[in-house]
Image (cartoon, rainbow, N blue to C red; front, top):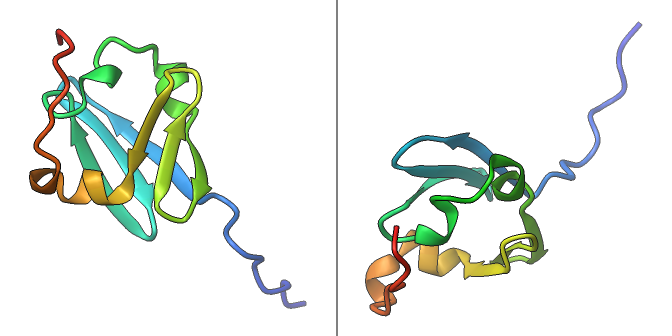
Length: 89
């Protein structure tokens, strides 16, 4: 007996790892690193809140429990976004 073909991937974004240096996310078939140096909002956040990430649109990520909104472009090309958070981290 053959199994049915797998369905569409419903997981648009996933946090795949958290280290002492930052977090890894998998989005659009690509794994990307967000360092705590560039994205300090995540450094002292509880793991559960970091793992709860949503993708409200194709190029936008949102962590509702942390009230953090990021475009995928700002993650992939931080050099194009010179304003860096002043949060202590």
